[in-house]
Image (cartoon, rainbow, N blue to C red; front, top):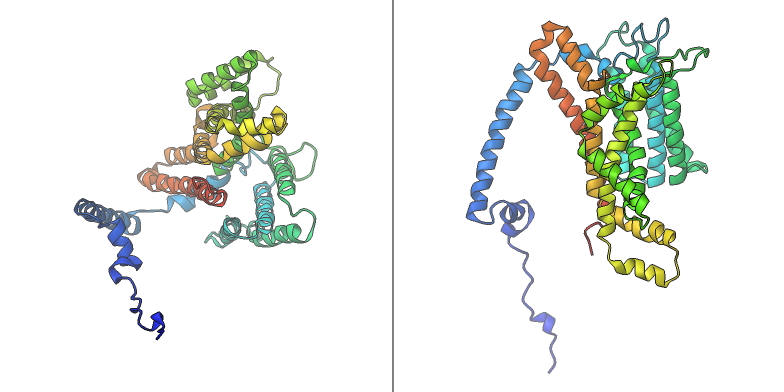
Length: 416
């Protein structure tokens, strides 16, 4: 007589509650052994004490009035003072550049289809629009400024619609438009002689977070391709090219950035006549780019050396020329393997932009220090201001790190 074995099978019981959910995660990750449990308890006590005293000072004792008092100078420095822009209101120019950025983020959102790009676009557009509701009087923050800030949300929607319903909805078009937008931003900020409402503003008045971002964007966009060229040149079979790349890389890696910046302002002008136009911003951008390119080259070279020689041998067996092997096989895999150090170099470059104070440029850190030094009544609140600046830098650097992790997950870095 045949019987169905499923009728007599024992019931399948769920796993114990101590091995699933939050309790299971804590047991595996925090209390898996006696020494792990001890370290968890000690870390919990230290964290609780830090939060108790830290939050108590932040909420009850700290005086954050210095941040709104400094206000827009944190963002644009002295760009809109009377000496920089006599008889005009130049505040709309940085805001127009922000609108271009928001529109490009909207286009990137439409092309990427959501995910981290959508979140970044919404956060940037939302925060920019929220600045319009700061509790300032209209004498300090006019209606035109507030309307331009609120326009970031429509600009986000316009960018999304352009990429969704026109031929501009591709990564190549976004890259081209990003370069054009950056050039247009520089033209707007610098101004054009003889053009109404575009009175030239000297770069000595550029400052604040705007200056840090401009230097970082230019450095990141230029140091990456220059670093690739240097890495390939260092691996070249042409001894002259290889030697020149090695000298360049080791020279810039062996000299501190602050020394290079100082030399660019003191020694470089000696090589040109007195009437030659000098631009401290351009020199600083070039030095930061070349300095970062040397480190970027070593990151790329490490990625190239991590590839198995069989990759190149297989490409040669298929009859691919050397440039196609490098461009389509070796280089994409090398960059994929070294995404963490590449992004780490970008983060370091962004933080290094604060060193331009050595050449007299008022970046966000230096203009804050100058404000505290020039207003002794706020001297006791210096720690609040610099904690706020540390938070600003952390937001940008964590954003870059977050995007890097998502790109790694998308490309499957570290997975077989």
